Image (tube, rainbow over all chains, first blue to last red; front, side, top):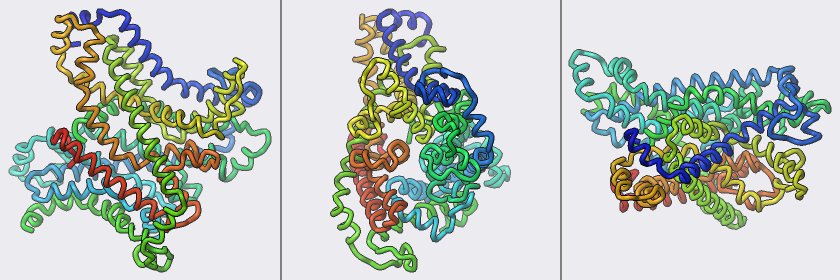
Length: 298
Length: 300
């Protein structure tokens, strides 16, 4: 791989090359296949699915299911709104506060920095379990049915804070901070104007992981919300797939006889997953670098 | 104290995270006392009536304890094993591919399942395995084979769940192992080639042995999570399907059902504490093993 000639030399076993391409292709296709089947199902007409079942391509192309969903778009639009607000606000807050803490944890002059790191790390080793968490948040903090719980619940990941710490330590040189201090810059200014810009690559990676976690979080909503107006997209999808409690207007219509029940589920899945698949090609490199910076030292 | 006075601003910058973890992690952690109480609304988390080990007696006497522990353990061991093997296989073959565009495309496709939630995966599963309209049964129909009733037969799930787990994670794992392979010094391969090593020999004698440290480290990290079972996956794929319950009930789903289903706080909190203690013991043991193997890689 290091140079053209060695590349050619290493490539001198044609049978093995074929096997490599075949194995990789098979794995990649198995990973892709469900997405194709999903699209095929969502864009099929209900009658063709009822007659012949799902298939790898739509046997009778139709937008029936999507039209149906958007005839009463309030649930979906409201869920989009909740998901977007929670993802954007949550990711920005989480990144900013995590990076600030990570920077502090890496400062050598703090005598207690390792104790603070262990204070965070210990929460990954031991926790009180589901019941105390649920009761504390719902009955004592009264966070049920608030945006706050959707944002705060999945907010911090200790591993991300520790990864950010090692990244900042290795990419923001100590002398630079010292000289800024001598020039009279305050701690906050050093953080905002030096540390944050210099940690951009790590911020991008941790940011996309955090955003993904928020977008895909249905658990917090299931545990702590009962109001329709606070249902995020993934939880709405879950409710529709398990056909419990379709809310408001759509419920009456979906349960009616003419509703495309089968394709409806798949169209809804496409609507909930679509944004991720659209953003994915652009964000992939940040994810890949995120996986590997995390692996260097957990 | 002097340290805090001099660097108060830095400590202040850490404060939001500290407050968060006190409120959202340490106080609920103190809530483990619930496992020894008969929870009541008036008494709340900390001051309800003390009943000692009654909740645990009930949990172990229910016969569920052994079942969920076994299921959690067996599934997670299968997940970890299959994930490791397939990630390494994918990474090794990926590293043998020279055409950049092909490599990039296939990596993208493999990584795709990582990004979707288990909710979406459950839609996929329905799409494929649904008795009446699912693709699998349609294919079986074309070849005149008998349709499979997968949602009411436990034996399929011993294969399906690990398969889906690998499907979702193989892209992620292969990136980890591929990074380790790329990190191997190319001169070793060149020297081996000059000495006449075939490609298979190079993989067996160079790549795999040099992946061993990465593999052991990741395996031990995975071992730490062995008693925390993929709640999302089990809940989304199986849900409350009574027919599959015995084969697929894990500690997390039991705790969830006791809490949200039957509001049995004593049961839920004793199950939770049981899981936390098991997890802690296993992590400490795994870490001890890592330290013996390579001090540098140990978590603490």
